Amino acid sequence: MILVVGGSGRLGRLVVEALSAQHEVRVLARHATTAAPPLPGRVQLVDGDVRDAAAMTAAAEGASCIVVASHGVESRERDGLESVDVLGARAVAAAATRNGCGIVLVSAVGAAPDAAQPLARTKWAAEQIVRECGAPWTIVRAAAFAQTWAMILTLSAGRSGRPSLIGPGAALHRFVDVRDVAAVVARAATDDALRGRILEVCGPDPLTPSQLAAMVQEANSWHGAPRHLPLALARVIGSGLSLFRPDLGRRLTLGIAMNESQPPDSTEGELPTWLAMRPITPETMRWPPASTSVDA
Image 1: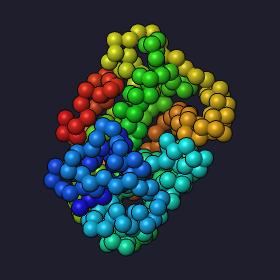
Image 2 (image 1 turned 135 degrees about the vertical axis):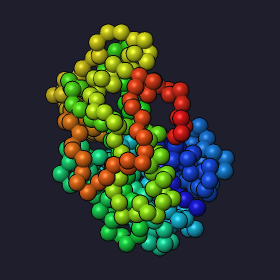
Image 3 (image 1 turned 90 degrees about the vertical axis):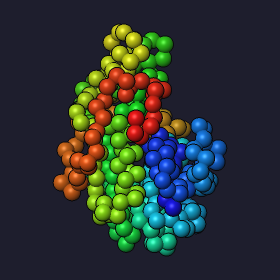
Image 4 (image 1 turned 30 degrees about the vertical axis):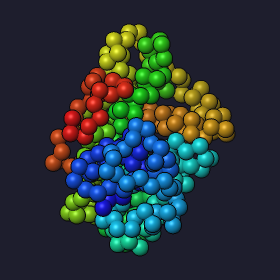
């Protein structure tokens, strides 16, 4: 049995879909039993918080591997990012060592103690906890999901047909199709040969947020130049939002950080050359997507 933490999210759902075809899967999420749309019928759903050590240990009973696909970006708690990712990693590590199972941790490309993006810093801290806990581990570092940006840019356009960008939107990133990340995570969950390795999953071509915005417009037959929020103004807004809506302030901070180009590939990471990466196209940037299947 494979336990997927955060299995009701964008990535988690795809991982569950890929694994449940051949394996017993249990999903732990804060609202797993009320997830919409529902997860596959054969999947066992458990409501619980990744930070709850007792709940994690109970959910991991009988598991061969724990997949951690959760993150604290959307938490409304002031310290939600560090709390969910770091405290969650500690609870997962304790559950894995107690139950004798492996861990597959979904991290971020550029994870480092001094990374510009807060998410990359907390993912680095989570990585160290997992690597040092004694359980067999695999870390999958993923670039920014193209489908997440498709949603953000589509919603930001409203009725104007002009997506909004924070800053110039000229920095290069290897945005990745979330289906490719899910395929790597699902394989890592079942392939013991990948233990003790860091896999980096990036799109095949570097693209800018402005190029993604143009793809969103093409996918929707929209016209007109994208709108740009000046970085200085975005910082002021983000600081204010963090006081009463930490989740929105956190998203804005991550958007600001996207104006720095993606860091080079890690020297300790490796690209999964066995997977043919999907290019990012206007069809990829259509939201809601026409297809969400891992094998599509």
